[in-house]
Length: 179
Image (cartoon, rainbow, N blue to C red):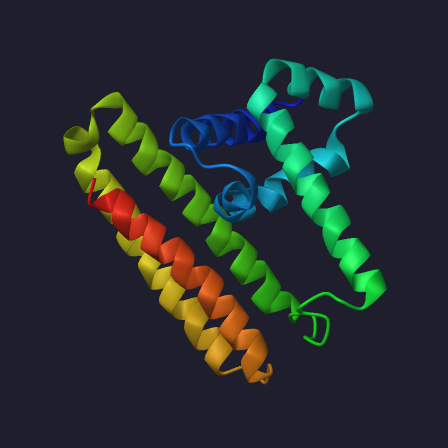
């Protein structure tokens, strides 16, 4: 079993358990887990069937996340085929924006997991400085990405969709930082 895939699955499993403990479920769970999509895709691309089964057995919440993401993907596919997808008219993001957005969302996922772990362990005060440093760096990266979107030639609707997703993530990080 690849160490990389095991670390990704363990991180997904931990965050899912944190969210489940808070009562987050369904679509709200997916909103929280979007930053893990790239890692999940990496596992799908690199893991053998046996390794994937082992990860699912070892990390049950990883399995639940994968199942939720698969259902979301299938729903998106069906809506696209039916012409009912709400974002069907939006162009695909240019590769530099897509990479930057994906990286920022993955960092946000790491940051949210770190904040929640510190809160859950009662060690928030001990880790506050490190977490605040991570949060400030993420905010700088967020501002850089917002500027990339603003200077792009994407339609305003594409920019609004991205800004709404990022605003939701930023609000969650702010709330966790106030814990």
